[in-house]
Length: 181
Image (cartoon, rainbow, N blue to C red; front, side, top):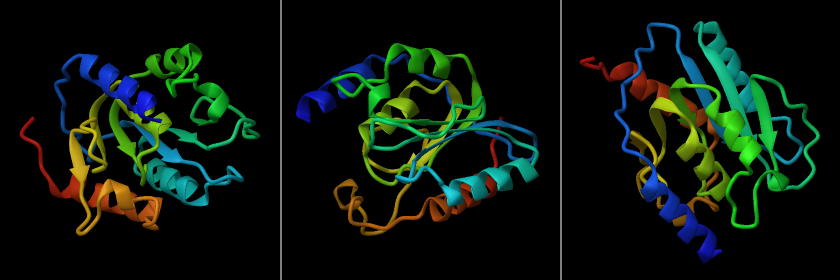
């Protein structure tokens, strides 16, 4: 496991510097949501979040990850679930995943990952987005971090943080903060 993390850290440091732009939620945005899928790939809370964003006139793409080899969910243009077979031995996404990810540019990446899963860290790192926001898992990928009191990344496997709760926190901060852009 340590070699996988070492490779990730090495690749993260080689990523070009970004110029983040704060999103204006009062206008339509193109949003990427990444999340940990449930084993049955139903993801009811993620579907509810998507419906909320669609009501706000947002263009939403969702990519999830589940720790199993065989994925039963169809790959759709706006929704995709990746499995272990979509990553190489070192935990890096396969070339076709990176190619598909690179075809789109997003105004906002919302990372609903609640524990440090390397496959989702790669997705967050390689997503081309003007602004990235997610839970503070100590990796320096995001432009805005949500921190919880008395919460460390080591506790994340034990903590039952709901994706919908994290989404509501993120949206609350994004609507409260006004950009100078």
